[in-house]
Length: 475
Image (cartoon, rainbow, N blue to C red; front, top):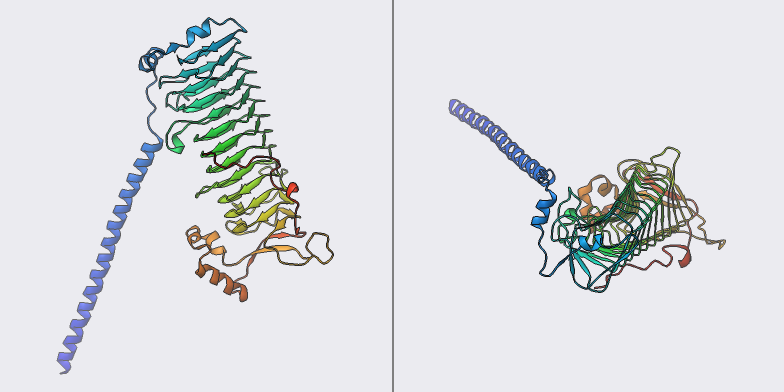
């Protein structure tokens, strides 16, 4: 009996060891297969990304080749001979018919279009190139440019000063106005769109490069990519309505510009300042900048900006701060803004300092102030803001709370530190965890923000945009 039992026990041990060994081998094999699959996916992804973002540039084309490729409707009249026949300082009146681009303007003149006057690009290249100062164009529809980004196919290419471009319509053109070393021009009351392409493949409605002192005002921009200002100073972007685009206005290395009275609706980002200093952002209305990258006003390494009387409503993030101000002696001032019903009112990318938040109204936001990683927003100045989740008394009736407003990080640290956990925001499970932690915290909460003089109310005229039209859809 003992020998039989011993044999059975030995057999069981051998089977167990063999099973364990097979299991280990199976796990290793599965790991190898999984690793190979992932490497294959990585290779495919890398190749796909390379193909998407690093396509070889198309071969350059000569003017003769481009002319051969252009296709115009029957009866189109060549534009360049009409320009050549206009005397310096004269007026070219375009009739209600189709005029075949391109056109190159090398001397001062004025182009006036009657209703129905169209300049068609034939689907190739840019339409109008302006190389002379003091050129004006009004009442013209420009359409059907080329679709090449490397040649910046545009409706109007500006290379001159003191031009005036008013009341024109740009449709089915990759880029709208492209300014390069073009100073003190006026672009006003134009309706600008791009081509029917995915957002990232469209062109910019207005592209300003090394161009100073321009006025971009009262334009209606829709379905474009960006309105971008690079390496430029003293430009005014005012009263524009920008919808369904990527960046409403994007400043990069652009200083001392003024953005005011613009309205933004359903863009990915309303305004973004990148490496841009000494700018003013005043009286703008920014609504519904949604999606994973949705931002009302964003900062990256930008200093000495004045942000006043803006209305930030229903954006994924009202304000986004990344290493701003970047100048150790710089600052950014946020005063009298209405920041309401956003996913996060103010999101700090890291523990940073140098910003001042005064007399702003924080209303109905899902989260007030968040700081990714460790640290808090308390190295910035918070004073006299209205917080709708503040709880306290005003016994002396001076409109200022007797106790400070404080926001602590409890269970919301989960979704701030683990991005995937944001899926559970407002869920009963996370709310229950938050409630239990507040009753008896197992970890020390983090103080995110403290306002020593919270306001109980701010009169409507003193907060938010003053007079800027709200950007509701018109269709």
